[in-house]
Image (tube, rainbow, N blue to C red; front, side, top):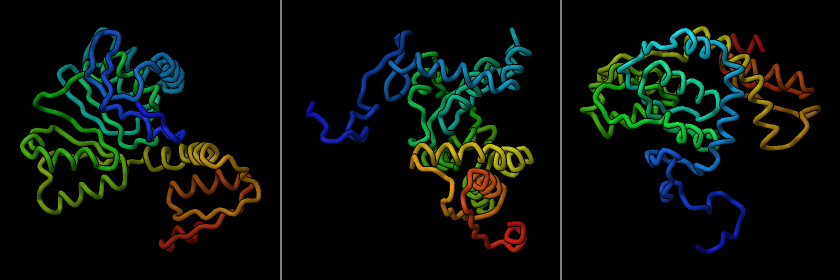
Length: 254
């Protein structure tokens, strides 16, 4: 193959064009490099230490399979934390099929570890449950496989965008399966959106810009729960924070 003229991973061979197998001989997966599985497994094990609730579920259901027969397909960020969720579902008896909702947030080594363990088992069967982020998977199945869409037992959506797309389907009378709006749940709004964003905004900006926050002028668009968390984190690091907001109550809070 011709040598790449840049250091960009975009110049590498697409994972779809690679013939890869895990140690069990299975090739029913699409990851960047299966050889990163050992590193990814260490990341998953570290994440397990920070997720006691899911680990407690595994321990509580030892020997039992309360989700036996459940077939769950997901489209979320592929991180060590979502890997713990996926493997917990598998430990409880569910069959899972997963895809990344965002190529830039995907941890390739974690995806490799999941492929190596066989956590991403085949799921071309009848009744599914969908765990979605952004509504991409729901929309894709609805458009491409309308007959299969009608057989789905339920949809769980965790993002504002995905919930809006579900409302559009419902308004048009085309949402023919139960759907759960996780985005508006108390735990998502008051904990994940507020506290988790404090951590991720700083980590993401540091990794992408490698800049100091102290004294920098920062504009945060919106002062909802996510905006509040971002502002608190940036202000704590010494940034001069400005907020734009169209909601009068949130603007008054800011």
